[in-house]
Length: 357
Ligand SMILES: C[S@@+](CC[C@H](N)C(=O)[O-])C[C@H]1O[C@@H](n2cnc3c(N)ncnc32)[C@H](O)[C@@H]1O
Image (tube, rainbow, N blue to C red; front, side, top):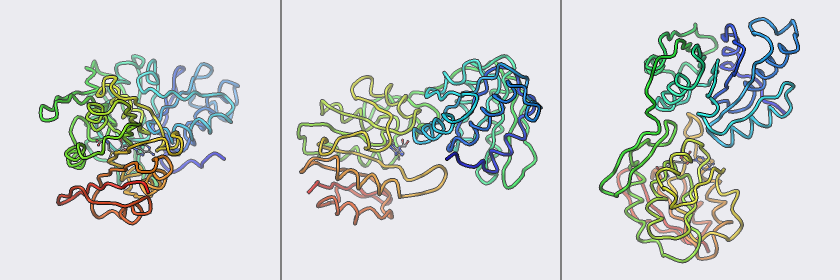
């Protein structure tokens, strides 16, 4: 079943304006409802359906969708599979934006992610590419207009409706591509590469830093070592100095592309949803600074599910080493996996080691 359009989707569709003949790119759709509605409009206008022709230039629109999260990408692919008129899911952001005439996007929560989208659209889109970007008013800031203004001559906001608003950007500027960014950290002798949507950018997160200091306490058994939710690949890179078989997994396309650059071939970087692709009792060690957000909301449910699945994929005696904010309710669940000790703590974070019983 395809999800319903939400108020942001509906406002975006109402604010599209003239749709040019050419590539229409849908970014950040989490459910597939927006991409499907666009595909159906494009397909219907191609069939000269008078009810939907208004605003569409006619034959030739091609709708492609890119969502950073693999979970969202799968939802969009499923929604498009049943849509008359086709539509294609493209896992690479730059590839999706190449030749874009119109970009319809759900605003990302990070300004860096928005900057990468805007620059890439200005560079790789058509000469008159436009962006129509929607979000919930409570998640929007004036800085978003500034970010869009760095890549487009004209930026203006729609009137709000149902707590939602749309930003319009037109007139692509001649911009420099600055993504992925890179920064060398002499203290860990590592150059971090980061696409805009990757967690912590080229910084080392405080929790990750606390965990880095504990990695030499891993028991060093043979076997696969997994960096789960690898982000830009900081932990995987350091683990690969000591272990031969390091697998880095992240659900985010931006994270995977970043970690591939940061690890420079030293780890096997994969886009995946948690540990689902790994076989039972196949892993010696899992290291993770796990997610604490779902979209813009703080949510510990996904990490509780990851902890439960760690029990399945770890072999007996295998280790699960986590860093997390100390107020989060993970300890009782970790103890269901096996005996758990606290390796380190500071004012905000705990590093725990759990040995699979
Ligand atoms: C707190 S960040 C840590 C990133 C990185 N390990 C670091 O230390 O900088 C959590 C990461 O988990 C990823 N993530 C979220 N949900 C996931 C899932 N279901 N499967 C795999 N990775 C996920 C996010 O994209 C993000 O990169």
